[in-house]
Amino acid sequence: MALSDEPVNSAGVDVAANLAGVQAFIAAAAQSAGRGEGDAALVAVSKTQGAADILPVIQAGQRLFGENRVQEAQGKWPALKAANPDLRLHLIGPLQTNKVKDAVALFDVIETVDRPKLARALAREMEKQDRRLDCFIQVNTGEEEQKAGVWPEDADAFIALARDELGLSVRGLMCIPPVEEECSLHFALLREIAQRNGLDGLSMGMSADYEVAIQFGATLVRVGTAIFGARKPYP
Image 1 (cartoon, rainbow, N blue to C red):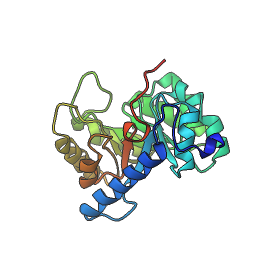
Image 2: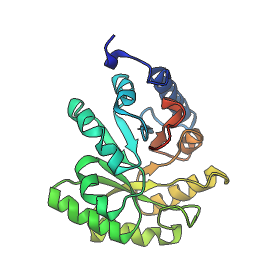
Image 3: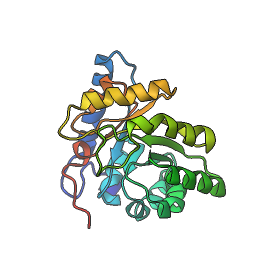
């Protein structure tokens, strides 16, 4: 059987079955929340996964993927995207300004815009490359010092800077709640900030809490381990 026909990855995980299960769970959660089918889209988080392990998920029909690191993504996604032009790749990890050029060239959506210096660098590079990528503002809803993201009290001003002054295509907000706190409080806060700024996109919810995120209006949920199995360590 050709590699592209295999439903399992190199660890023996049936990723096609896992993907179908996650998609069914998302649909059920949306229906339970009184939302329409397709209101919440799945971003399959493929960080640390090699191209051969991502391919069965693509073959199973998944088209949105998320990666944390620009350099890692450069090693596998150009060929995958060339073979599958309808794929869309989201950057869901912190972005350093010295990686902006590469990120704009490779990714389709930047979910982690979190500071003025980065927003300005993205605006300049998108103009240079004539690529207008959709962007999400990352909000540090837990105000955790070790975590990226603009703090909630600064979010309105930063959204205005990125969208109105710099002309970035800001589609919504993204957050990663603290693991030890009730996630619903953070999802509600992100939704509130988005609503008062006229933003529809909410990237929130991961493998452990995406059902709750959908109840609070998530339009993107980022799921990795529930599809690919246990995360591989970074090299």
